[in-house]
Amino acid sequence: MPLENRVAVVTGAAQGLGLAIARRLARDGASVLLCDLQEEKVRGVAAAMAGDGLQAASVPLDVTDGPAVTAVFEETFRNRGRLDILVNSAGLGQKVTPTVELDGEEWRRILEVNLTGTFLCCRAAGRFMRRQESGSMVNLASINAHSPAALVAAYNAAKAGVASLTRTLAVELAAYGVRVNAVSPGPVYTDFNRRTMAQRSRTLGISRDEMVERVRQAIPLGRWGEPRDIASMVAYLCGSEASWITGQVFQVNGGLQGVSAAPPRTPRSES
Ligand SMILES: NC(=O)c1ccc[n+]([C@@H]2O[C@H](COP(=O)([O-])OP(=O)(O)OC[C@H]3O[C@@H](n4cnc5c(N)ncnc54)[C@H](O)[C@@H]3O)[C@@H](O)[C@H]2O)c1
Image (cartoon, rainbow, N blue to C red; front, side, top):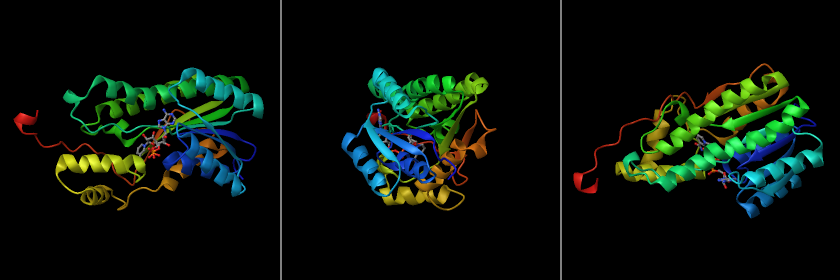
């Protein structure tokens, strides 16, 4: 059990990649606290994990709420006596919109959840890990951090920010034996992409199924990612096999290098 006796916190763990990561860490022996905005859902999935014999508990958490974030980490450290792993998977996709039409509220919300939420959790966890002189954080960035996609400027900027924050923290915390890395997933068909594919297909005037197939064909390994593809990389980075790896942003994307196709012009009357 590579993560036996480790205490882990996973945000955005009610579904999608966060849930797959939480399950994988627990199967590797960690005791996992699942956090999410969706209170009932996260309670249900944690209970199901516990029912499968895994060490899992849940707490409702909005990662943009600084005092609430601090309280969750303080309580975890107080109750468990340690904090070994933080995985920041809470995230929000952007409404697919030309940047010149993007409203300020959407821009702020996307930055707040994806970037500020990651900062707040890293800051809170980092204080305990620094004191403990060990720990591993893994942030979920995105292929968009490396290759910005058209029509989602706020999301691209937020994820590029997550990559930068990851590298900064890694340098600052290295002296304390705390490692900080990020994983940049390519397309995985979670709720997140169900919504994004529906919106993108409309901008191109094709069906969602055609859009999903178009993306599949663009991926050199010929298939969409599965949550377990991301979870296995995260688990590796959390464990001692990765003890000489910090400040890295790993792309796990089936070989897909970019998602930056330029959209067609919209008729002048619509712009
Ligand atoms: N699915 C993909 O293809 C893909 C690709 C690249 C990056 N990512 C990133 O991976 C992460 C997970 O994505 P996913 O596909 O599982 O998405 P998802 O939408 O299925 O799950 C995201 C989870 O985050 C939670 N969440 C949202 N806002 C929150 C907040 N303020 N506080 C706490 N929880 C909050 C949601 O309730 C949800 O359970 C995200 O950061 C996303 O940007 C996903």
